[in-house]
Length: 429
Ligand SMILES: Cc1cc2nc3c(=O)[nH]c(=O)nc-3n(C[C@H](O)[C@H](O)[C@H](O)COP(=O)(O)O)c2cc1C
Ligand code: SF4
Ligand code: SF4
Image 1 (spheres, rainbow, N blue to C red):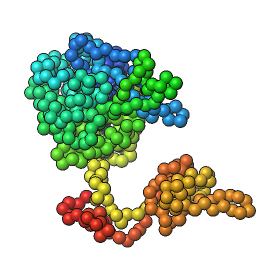
Image 2 (tube, protein in one colour; image 1 turned 45 degrees about the vertical axis):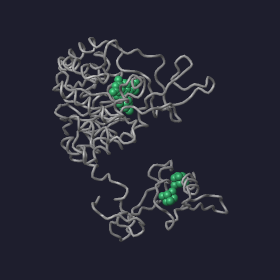
Image 3 (cartoon, rainbow, N blue to C red; image 1 turned 90 degrees about the vertical axis):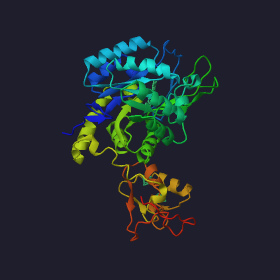
Image 4 (cartoon, rainbow, N blue to C red; image 1 turned 180 degrees about the vertical axis):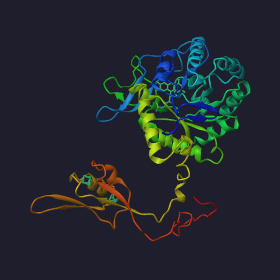
């Protein structure tokens, strides 16, 4: 049986599944039930200065798929709306009752060193395992000079991280905003400030949809709206890329990463870990489906690890990082071609339309003159192996992309004679 326990920047956890800082972790009542359900840790809903933040009504909206499944989730909530004293009291009690579970305290304060120096000993006294600096909240708090307003300026990230390392012995996890051009800059700054780890992503600036009668976006607050923070399944590809960027960066490659963004099942979690996340955090999936989703995560990961022969999580953390490279190091001589399994094909023609109108024109539509029956066949010589037909085909496995034996050796763009600006090869993939 695979061992799911981990050690993340010195913090031991019974499994790599933590709840991210958000409503599911905003009070003892929730956190206790999360631990009972099996979560290895929580990042407590962000604490700030008193008086506590005040929220508006309504607060959430969603981007739906055709069957009303929630693809992306948007919120305009602020940090905790309960007093610092109540939160600290509850954290102390829960940590005492659940010593083997991780509690990280998320913090957001203005950029004044004394404020940090004052709060950090109070947090340390709760017995919490670490702190997470919320430099990512994209709505409400940036207008007050906090959250993403800090995370978007690497100098501020470094400065506040250093204050926390100076005034606390707890491990410091810096939570990064995705609302930035190059996420490596704040990650490097966090490292320079002494961060023990980074976590990402926080939410992405978003407007999900509008009420076209009232001419206002959702969520509606008395006839007006504002942009919110986007999360849930739809943000996973963005988060995965940002995690990989940091894991691949020579300056931050050894910095532990807690991966967040659209994680809803064990496979999502395994993907984040393969790209360098030592643990993962979950918010939207737990909000939509409840704490018990962790059961599938633990079972699924454990079974997959047994199947693959991984005895501990650390054996596969970062394993996909060396295979994630710059475009210029991809093999120009690699070739795949689409192949349609005629037995599975339901003759819907979607692959044909997609290939035809995306200008590859590599699928032939053959119509039997007598019966009118249609058949779709790949024109091998024309196929560029783009995957579009495989993506658009409604029958899973009906179209496969088959690697061709070109007989040619590995050659990347820096070595390619077709490259008019061929670079000198100074490094390889
Ligand atoms: C309603 C809501 C409130 C949130 N509040 C916080 C917060 O207080 N502090 C924080 O660091 N992140 C907060 N987040 C962001 C989440 O912790 C997480 O980074 C983000 O939702 C992406 O993860 P997900 O796709 O699993 O939801 C909040 C997210 C939601 C949906
Ligand atoms: S892989 Fe691309 S080019 Fe080839 S048949 Fe499919 S859609 Fe056309
Ligand atoms: S999309 Fe798939 S099922 Fe539809 S015609 Fe093409 S191969 Fe057949």
